[in-house]
Length: 445
Image 1 (tube, rainbow, N blue to C red):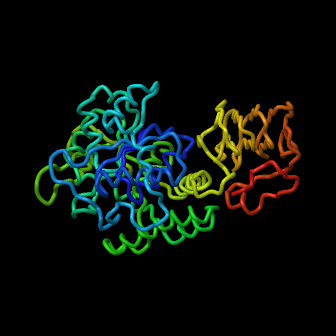
Image 2 (image 1 turned 180 degrees about the vertical axis):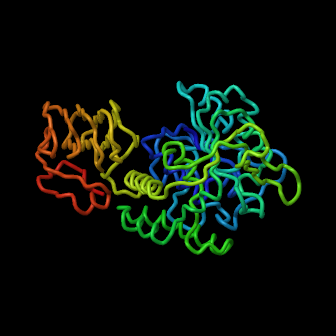
Image 3 (image 1 turned 90 degrees about the vertical axis):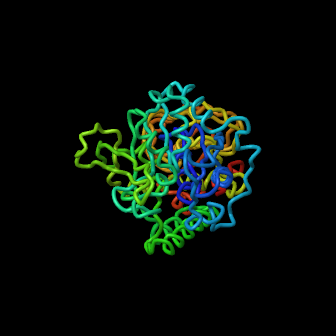
């Protein structure tokens, strides 16, 4: 997938979700003006990537203004930088993470055309970059699997009484995108995202369950600031809505959403209605459907996904002490050779398949650290201190050729008995340390 974003507070959470989900492979990130200037949103994307320890992803600078009208920013919500409210974000390493010789539109075109499989897009800012892509390079249209848009409203807007911010920022771009002929466009409107609130209970859960206090504080700083501005501007007392991650989640957990295939049009005229999304829910216009309108999301599975991804970002970010977990690829590292003190085959415990984590650099290999199950786990890792499967693993094949069924026993070259619990807090507080040999760095988080 590709993420097009104007990184502010909710975009930061969307970026973490996109980069850490084992169901998605994040191919690139493009920035666009919106919550702040494109210079700020580009820098913000890089700062989040660094803080979350996201590897192998470049940021491509995109449009600085709308196609037709003057730009608007959301500094009243996101602050002057677009990501105000914390002092824990690093200075952006532009030389490492910003693509210097390619803009966002050309990068999206190159990536989509080079991909052996259709590519999904999540657009969570103004749609200027996407409209330019589809207009300049229409050959990408049949190669886009799904376009998930955070934008619009079935009723009241949040920028004017009629219009939601992303659509209002560039209605002409939104019109181009919705009428482009992409086979699967999904619109996630305010009516849905306003049900996904970062309440006090959610923030408390982050504080309790994210194992590294510095990363927990970073996330809660951002959410508390976002909540305070939402209260000041909109009178929302329960917490800020996490708009943008909902659109990313649609790409890999569509089963928790309800939706209707309808006609949606955009008001591009001047006046009070500019930027309004006309959602023909009752099919009065007789025009063909062009969009899946999302009408609800199940909150519990959504938040469970968000917490799991924050846990992975927490364990791979630079705030983690030296020697603790390093996640180069949040999905299964099948056959991948990585020099690291800890290789995670399946960090989130998603069920399924064969995992083959490999390590050349020594340290510890964990087939599955949080839960879930594999049919088979294979590891042929040189110079390891410990190889550990877990109690959900059906079969483990280590260097010694041992097979483990059911409960975890001594495995490979290690003489340990370790049972892993489902959540990272359980892992931090409750994993027994008996039999740990001195060479391992597995529990230094």
